[in-house]
Length: 90
Image 1: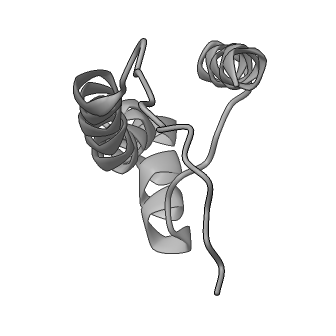
Image 2: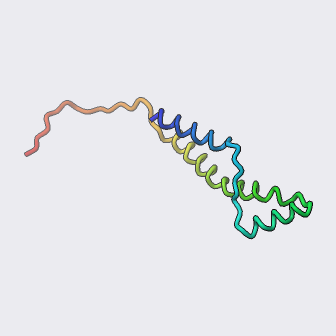
Image 3: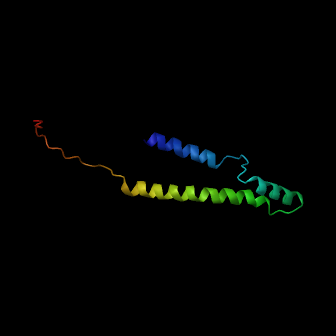
C-alpha cells in the first residue's frame, strides 16, 4: 500500500513539474490569444495559464479533502478480540 502511494506521489510530482507547453484552450480562445500577442498585446499570454489554473483547482480541492479524510479515519493498532469458541454449524 505504501509503495503504491509513493509511486503515485512521484508520478504526480513529475507531472506537476514537467516543462511541456500545454494548450488548455478552445480553438476560438487560442486564435484570439495568438492574434493579440502578435499585435503586441501581452494579456493573451496569461490566458492559457488561467485556464489551467481553473482546471486544476477542483482536483486539488478533492485531493486535499481525500487526504484529510484518509488521515482522520484510518486506524492503527486495531485489536481484534476473537473468542476461541467452537462454531456450531448445525
